[in-house]
Amino acid sequence: MTELFLRAIFADNLVLSYFLGICTYLAISKRLETALGLAAAMIAVQTVTIPINQLILNGLLIEGAWGWLGLPDVDLSFLKLIAFIGVIAAVVQVLEMALDRYAPALYRALGIYLPLITVNCAILGGSLFMAERHYGFGESVVFGLGSGIGWGLAIALLAAIRERLRYADVPEGLRGLGITFVVTGLISMGFTAFATVTLP
Amino acid sequence: MSLRRTLTRPLISDNPVTLQVLGICSALAVTTSMTTALTMSLALTTVLTASSGIISALRRQIPPQIRLILQITIIASLVIVTDLVLQAYAFAISQRLSIFVSLVVTNCLVLGRAEAFAMHNPVGVSMADGLGNGLGYSLILMAVAFVRELLGLGTLFGQPVLPGPDAGGWFQPLGFMLMAPSAFIVLGLLIWLIRSRWTAQVEENEYPLHVAEVRR
Image (cartoon, rainbow over all chains, first blue to last red):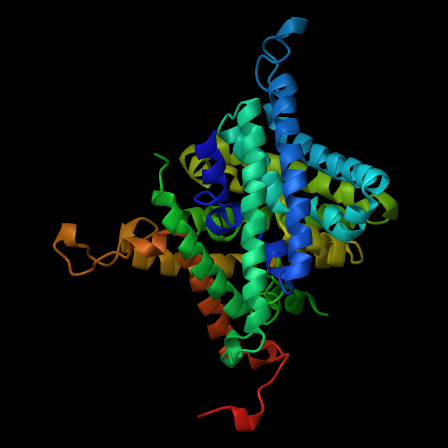
């Protein structure tokens, strides 16, 4: 479990080694403060949606899930894509209402980032990886938390670097998007070093 | 805007990936070889053209309040069909593409074109726009895959181009090109290349240095 957790944060980082959620990663990383807000929203949504999707996948969609009803041949796994998206949209909506009711300060801090996350490929990608790698319920909780933290860590690092990069004398054509990609590449290179780290 | 301009503008001068930063989520992971990049490009271009056409045809029937969920459902259905076709006729490649074909659903490019173009324009123009943007995306994907596969393995589409040491050649493959960081850096340099030719795309400097501060 600890190994899965650390792998999800570092070696299998969703942005830096699977390129998931890059659109949001590049668009909302101009300031560290907003990046941290998005990171918090990401961790919350990832930790909730992946286990829920795991339950839905194994309870309703995979082959044989309807065996207790006398329908052992029904295989609905082709529906998993639509089911996952529906679950993510619904969870984000519910989370938004719950936060608004019970933690208004946090709700205001997260602001528009929660709804934005619905169309973030990292969230859907996390659920699809869970399905592809056949995680159990406990594993999916750990994987959700870890991958959320990993994504948040990556965006916070990039935002901090970009805040300083604004004052740098970057070559004309590389300014803005170009240099951001190169910096992301360098961060990603640093993270690959963790791939060889194993726990004692 | 003429049909031809709609089709060719997104190729370089208004490219969805390098200028609008749309749709790179799923783009970079499949660029380790040109075969997977080509399959992914075909899948995305098909989905984008078809979804633009369908959404544009339904644009008067779609109520504005629930348009996003309807658009996502249409796109998701098309993606599932594409995924199943790939699994049926090109199983080996679909295994290598892993989850990335499914991720076309959340590709900002597809939803972005549906929302920005197909909802307001007739079917023919919308499909041309979808096709043009799909081709613009494919162009970048293939360019990155070309560099990564050529330098990483010395092959193109799996065919040996630069002879490696095993075949008695001189080329030492760069393992780094097959790892994730190289995709970011290659794309960054590609953007640099495009912007030094099409200078209109260069971004404003937020805090320009005063001339006296720059040592030349």
